[in-house]
Amino acid sequence: FASPEFAANIVGNQTLTKKKNGRLILSGNSTWTGNVEVEEGTVRVVGVNALGSNVGGTNVASNATLELEGVANLAENIVLNANSSLVNISGNSEITLPVLINANANIDVQAGTLTLNPSSGSAISANIGSTPNLTLLGAGDLVLEGVLNLGNNNPGLATAFGNFSQNGTGTARFKDTLYAATLGSTGGGTIWMDQPGGLSVALPSTTLISLDNGSILRRDSSETVTGLNLS
Image (cartoon, rainbow, N blue to C red; front, top):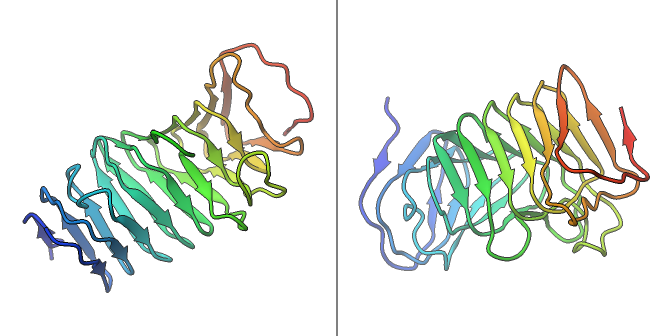
């Protein structure tokens, strides 16, 4: 049967919890200040205010999914847990607050472009003390306007890092510094190092960049590279 859609406007300050398998579609112009807990299944967001005020945040539990359908300027703190997924199913979406990763997680841009453009802080960061791996899937494009930090501490203090892997055919476009142990593309996609001139790529000295199955590494500016392994 069709996925249930909740188009009403939600108000108040309570937590909205999604349980059981299946998909819940939120499309209202909501103002509530509570959190969203995606404990099981999928929550699809249609509309910039569908998740309510940015006072609350959205926690995507292990193996659960948060979907975006062409959502512009989504001001929401999103937390991804083990094997959870942030999915852009269509259109162009933009998240303007940081995404936090607690454990290995996925971003799946099935179509269109997903832009992570926080006004402050990292675009994507690991929880302090953890080194999660992040996997990018899909044929669409991921644009990081802010820092990618998969390290176990804040930039400059981390001593270990998780891996970034692109398994889709789209483009992973990095426009700010990034911290990862490896950058891999195995599905024929493109890793685009689009940092402006004068901004350090800031990869750890042991970083390995791995390309396979026709994948491309793109860099449009002149760069001096030291301590980098390419395979």
